[in-house]
Amino acid sequence: QVQLVESGGNVVPPGKSLRLSCAASGFTFSTYPLHWVRQAPGRGLEWVATISSGGNNKYYRESVRGRFTISRDNSRGTLYLEVNSLYSEDTAIYYCSRTIREYDYSYMGDWGKGTTVTVSS
Amino acid sequence: IQMTQSPSSVSASVGDRVTITCRASQGISSRLAWYQQTPGKAPKLLIFGASTLQSGVPSRFSGSGSGTEFSLTISGLQPEDFASYFCQQADSFPYSFGQGTKVEIK
Image 1 (cartoon, rainbow over the protein chains, first blue to last red):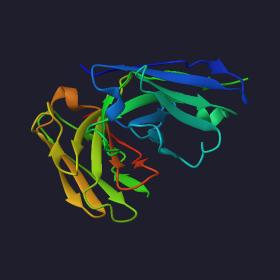
Image 2 (cartoon, each protein chain N blue to C red; image 1 turned 90 degrees about the vertical axis):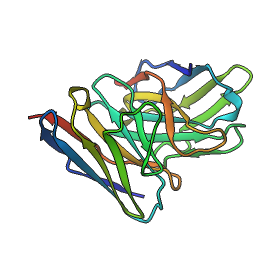
Image 3 (spheres, helix red, strand yellow; image 1 turned 60 degrees about the horizontal axis):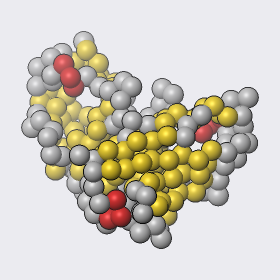
Image 4 (tube, rainbow over the protein chains, first blue to last red; image 1 turned 180 degrees about the vertical axis):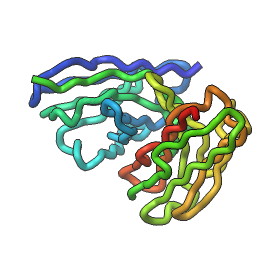
């Protein structure tokens, strides 16, 4: 079955960087767009970024554009999120998710358990 | 596109019918999903395309609407349905979620 396992979260001071990873298995990785979605403590869900199946098309929310970079390695079945210049407002659980249909960005059908990023001095 | 859910919370009993609404700030056709989230867990997709039930989701969940007004109805609340619910528009980037509705036990 589909499995998504995030890692890389940590406690970091403001301004620092992290690389989050999402290891996928149980499906043909290279045919599905993927998303990062985050949730700050006690808050709702916030879409962060999306990457196309081939990795050529990338979309970001305005507040992270220029600081975060989404990428994927289809040979390794792994999704990444490089997060730079972290602010306290970036503190959240970061989930990776897979779309429900191949080559279709729309809906997030499978989710990992998340990895926690805490930005604190 | 801003997504506004109402109510932000609702108290209900097992067996009740609950309806949550979601309004988009501009028309999104039927490109809307609903997710359920229980504390400490990842979200779970319930409905996509405004009204299509995801595989494995009980039929007591239903969705309707198009354009800017949408609703999620739970007919006959079960104990496992006490959770938070979020709508999400998938019409255009940046994707956006509603702020959530918490369904609590009365």
